[in-house]
Length: 191
Image (cartoon, rainbow, N blue to C red; front, top):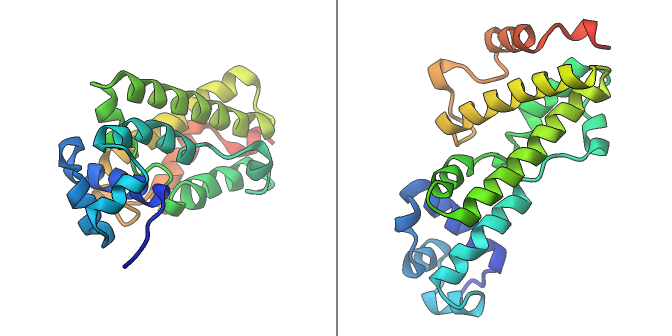
C-alpha cells in the first residue's frame, strides 16, 4: 500500500478540480486516484472542507514567481530572459496549470479570490522587475510587464497542459515570438 503526503493529496485535489470542477472532488475519488484508502486521507485532513480550505494557500506557494536572482540566470539580454521565462520556466512543472480553476473558484470563494489577487500582484511585480533589470524605465517596465502577464493569463485560460497549442502555435514558435517582440517593444532599445 502506498503512503501519501499532505502535499500529494493537495496536488491531486488541484488536478481533480482542474479536470472535474470543485464539485468533483471527493475523498473517495482522491483515494482511488492516489491508490490508497480514503481512510488515509484523515491522517492529513480533518474533513473535505479542511482540504478545500488548505488549497488556496497551497496553490499560492506553488504559484510564487521567480526571485530576482533566478531571473538573472535566464540570460544576459532581455530577449533571452523573456524567452526563457515564457518557454522554459513557466511551462516547467505547469507553474500556471491551475490558474483557470483557481480563478473560477475565486468568483464564489473570498479566500480563493484573495489568493488569486496576491498571486497576481507578485507575478506582475516579477514581470515588471524583469524589464527593469534590463534597463527599461519603471513606468514602461510596468506596462510591458502587464502586457506579458495578461498574455500569459489569457494563454492559461485556454491551455492548462504543456502540450496544448491553441491555433496550432505555442508561445515560443517563431510567428508568435515575433508578435511578442513587437508587442512588448524592441529588445535592442532597452539594453
